[in-house]
Image (cartoon, helix red, strand yellow):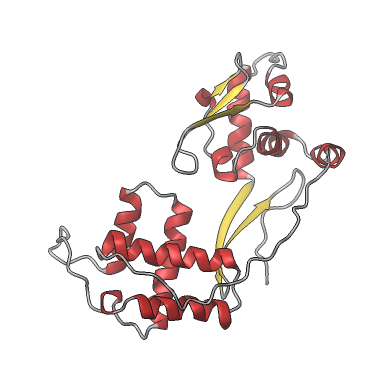
Amino acid sequence: MSDFPGGETPQGRKPRLLEQVHEAVRRLHYSRRTEEAYVHWIRRFIYWSGRRHPAMLGEAEVTAFLSHLAAERNVAASTQNQALAALLFMYKQVLGRDLGWFDDLVRAKRPVRMPVVLSRGEVNALLAQLRGEPWLMASLLYGAALRLMECLRLRVKDVDFPYRQILVRDGKGPKDRVTMLPETAVQAAARPARRGEAPARDRFARGVRRGASSVRVGTQVSASGLRVGLAVRFPGEPAFRRSRR
């Protein structure tokens, strides 16, 4: 695949298309997960079209690719929408083109499902099985409605104990927002320090960091798209083991 004309690199080489995609995503401050997903779908589109440069393609090829995902790959509607967003981003932000309407696009059907919600008793029973840092992480995810990466990036200076709130910086969007601080986490941090023990705020921050070390986030690209996996190591269990699946 030939290089698309663009700015020169420090070595004098013109950046390749995917390099320009990476640069555009980071310039607009999209999340790392979005960057990985967009690059994945753009690469799949290029290989599906016979390794032709997207600048030589247009609405007809994009429509055929998205219809192929729905009709032959049986992807979910959200997966097809993600692929569409990636291609629209590439054409607009990198190639400087606005694609027209996709009148002949075969849309993946979005199933109507009822959400599975745990009761308060079930949540209490689940949290009761955790101890230490994993309990603190799970309590924040549930009680403060934090996303996984927001909890992993939490800093102690963003936790306001007097006002019982957490300042989430650079969340989804990227936007800042304020959320509540669970009373259970406050009580755990307010425990009087033993002799030689760090202050409560430092213990809270250390607990979050240790909890983050027990969480592994991984991505796996399959036929149906990009999947994000989460693994948690509970106290007393051995280190992470690779799955044979």
